Amino acid sequence: MTGTAGTWVEALARRYGVGLGVRFLEKLPEGEYFRLMAGAGATVLPSVWPEPLGLVAVESVSLGVPVVGSELGGIPEIVIKYGAVAPPSPEEVAEAVAKVLETRYDREEMRRYVFEKFGVGNVEKFLSLLQSLVE
Image (cartoon, rainbow, N blue to C red; front, side, top):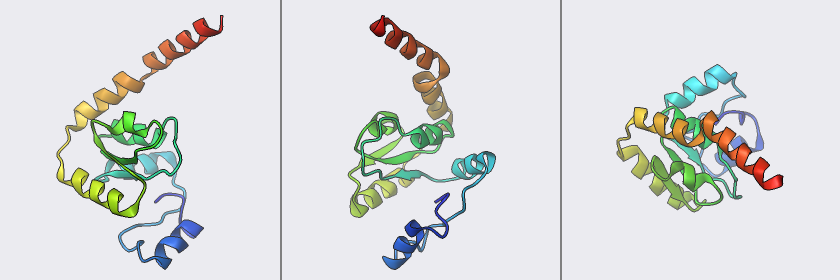
């Protein structure tokens, strides 16, 4: 977990004995962060609040790494094809992680999906639509 070394997150995980397979890291430079993410088997995002757009999920899928995300907010829209959604409970997240790690995903297809759905052209279309609604 990047940016969590020495924080309350690490202390809490260790207190409950769930930090054994987790590396708690300092905040990483952007290039190193993406290299680390690209080498992961999955990215886990068990958010407890409805994030409108889980940017970490978009980054992960764009790198060809499936995501296990919370069923809240906009995360399901991002990961529905390339990962799994689960309620933010430890048992259900663990089951979803196991399922995702057993599934083979086409990394190139994942990248294309992200760029088609969340690429610059779509942002411009969305902003144009918003502008037309305001006028």
